[in-house]
Length: 151
Length: 151
DNA sequence: ATTAATTCCGACTATTCTTATAGGGATTTC
DNA sequence: GAAATCCCTATAAGAATAGTCGGAATTAAT
Image 1 (cartoon, chains in turn red, cyan, yellow, orange):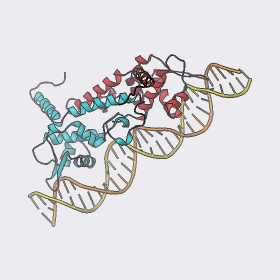
Image 2 (tube, protein in one colour):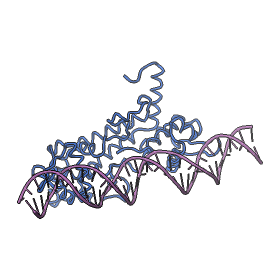
Image 3 (cartoon, chains in turn brown, cyan, green, blue):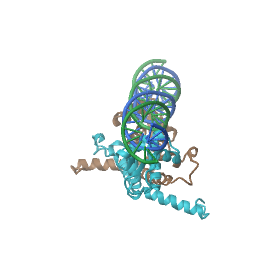
Image 4 (tube, chains in turn orange, blue, red, brown):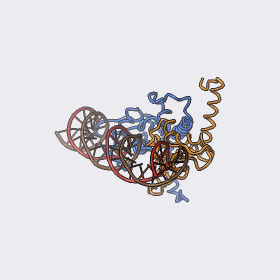
């Protein structure tokens, strides 16, 4: 039940883009450096995000990547579903039609996986990139005021 | 974000034991046959469950396995945590102390994984083996009455 | 035009995890 | 003593994970 690095790195990269939304393209190199990720590996991940249409690229010198929608219109679920496939604890409750098991009526455990999936979706579809940005800005502000965020 | 077969098979095996709670030991072979699982593989899983203390074994002929507590006192979370390790979308929010990352204060994505873990725990700790049994019995009853469970 | 910065693409690899399988030893009942 | 059963360790094929590598194509600035 772990998320792979794809999902985690992808969210961080998207957060990085969200923090700079409206200021032109951001290169992979700067994202990778700021977030401490391998540039080449990140390249693969962002390719998926581009194909899914939630980022777009500008090629050539001074190019880079941009969000295609406002940060408040992109959820964590959008990102993770793109990078990790359907979010579901088991294949039998995933959206993927190929894996519907035959005994859906009889399966007593299915109810567990259904409830689990529902709750996971709720959380991931509720949090947007903008929420993360607001959170980051708020913390920064609190730190500048000398307020200790942790107790 | 998938559960492995360990978790799923384990829950099915434990459900099988729960349905026969109070009727003496159940052999691995009968569980494996009824649930359609590999006997040898299931053996490894149930060894973990035994070491965790939620099943006990009786050796020798006519031996088998028994739940150590009533089905209503065993949650799905107990089973899955035993077989798959701490339930957490990332290591940084797992109970495992070894993997606490250094920048817990700064990490903007951590809030996502914390909320996710909380909701997952809620679901898995809310459902007991007894719930599964009740559900199975209810379905069986409905079918006998000629009532179609699905619409 | 050239150069430098950048995205884009496909192939390759090392490591770990999953999902078993196999064989034999120990224990208990009949 | 035979049969049934749990117990333990080792092995292994296949898939997934987490990258790495090299170079082609594109574009902005000079």
